[in-house]
Image (cartoon, rainbow over all chains, first blue to last red; front, side, top):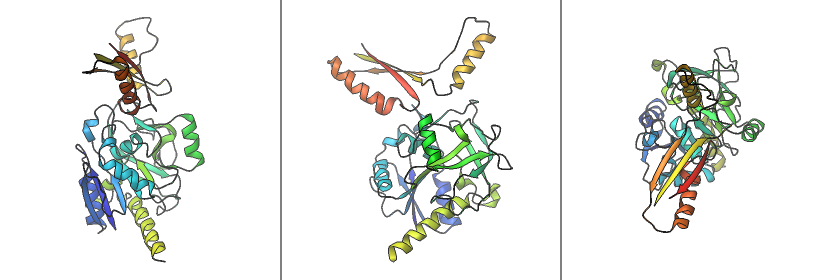
Length: 237
Length: 79
């Protein structure tokens, strides 16, 4: 499978994503500079974490207008899988590929710590391989990870099962204390209504090797692989 | 010509910076302060001559890029 990882000026988690996909999982993974107009033959696109354009103006606000994002919009419109991680999530929201916005953490602190995620639905290409009831221990590293959307949007997200992951405590409870940034409904990650584009603030690419303190992140990637595998089988039939 | 743009967080959005500044003002002894909202101010120097064209252009830019309508309001003045 071919993964394309975008690279903007200021991205810093692109290499980690390439490493995991290539070295941990053995798939083909390549970096694509933001000025490129074509995604090539990508099966899925990763929009990585970092500080694209220094978070100037608003995080992700400038990156969303990079030339490569037009190709990503087209890819998503054609049903291609797109996963935004941290700054990638912010870029996808600014680009309108995901609803809502990420704002400054409510305590104004940059949070660099491990959190627990409850998977709200396994009905998505990004969560279908996560065993029911299994919490994910993933690291976060962000200053602007507070998810915001108006009441109408939140109601739609809930009704459509577009909330994929929520911050929880070690026992799986969605408490306020377990919410590191003030995100509404403890939302850590969502998908679009078509379910082919997703974003999350925590870093699965930093939790795919036990050496880094958790390899729960593998379950997110394995969900994507399973989905792509089914697509390949369906197309061959 | 110069465009002056003020961008503020929408009322529905939690503004921890505003609240922090408000607390600090109170702690410093300033009274009669109800609320503080922290926003952004942009100055855009314009080279054209037509005020109306400039306003329309910048209004579009404000809506599309300079502000995020999901979380921010903006006020645009051209002088």
